[in-house]
Length: 330
Image (cartoon, rainbow, N blue to C red; front, side, top):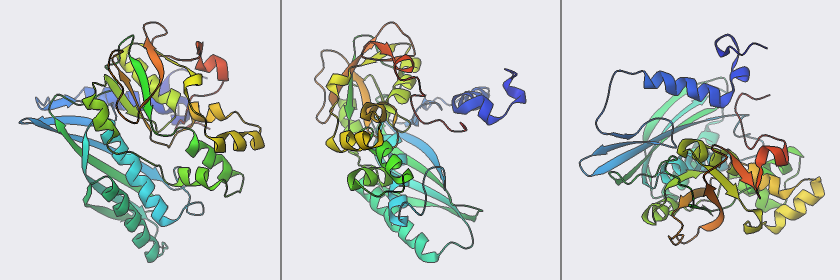
């Protein structure tokens, strides 16, 4: 197969390749803004205005790819879309303040479904002490949802993916692997354990975790949307470091253990590669005390740049599978 991505498909290029091409094109822009603190490529972009900065992030959710209406209620889908988008703002250390919603819907969609979706969306926005500012609607062949989340932070205090340093401690706040296990349960045609299925349907977030991390001196941060290892790789590449995870430091919930045993799976594989829990993982200076809710699970190292090691072994060598979710893969 030709390595020339210009003549291939998105499947050939992959999600990371597509994002790189888009960012390169954005980088060619001749327009410069002195208020731009963090440009496209992180969880969110940051623009400063007289002492404070606005943080912007946008996400798209497609029916059949990110959610299924036979697996989740309209309320749950609304909450899931709001939570996943607001998490990106929180991952910059910002306080979420508002969301914009654009939704494409087939003409045959029941009107009560839209009402329930909005109820869930507004509920989750309010859980994050954020308000719905407006949006747009359009006809579409399937349900497509776009959410823009907005947050605020003191200028210069946003936490990017690119500040991790060798010796830093890696800490996590929230669950990992629960949503992935819930997805596997649903794919098997089951509806229990309920705690796992619910974790897939609606992530459980601490919307103040990012602010606590920033106030505690976090050097980098990201929310786990694609998988713990995959998202830590973003930090490793952006910061020019390596990261090592110690599995003995990770608590494996009983529901993951029992479900993995029933499915002949490894619960740690779900924890390391499963996405959609939107936990926050950050790096902290070694002499800093981790903020409330964060648990140390590893450290930043100066070799194996751009890679994540699990118990001293490269993740890809130990598990021989992709470290997380990838768009456009078969």
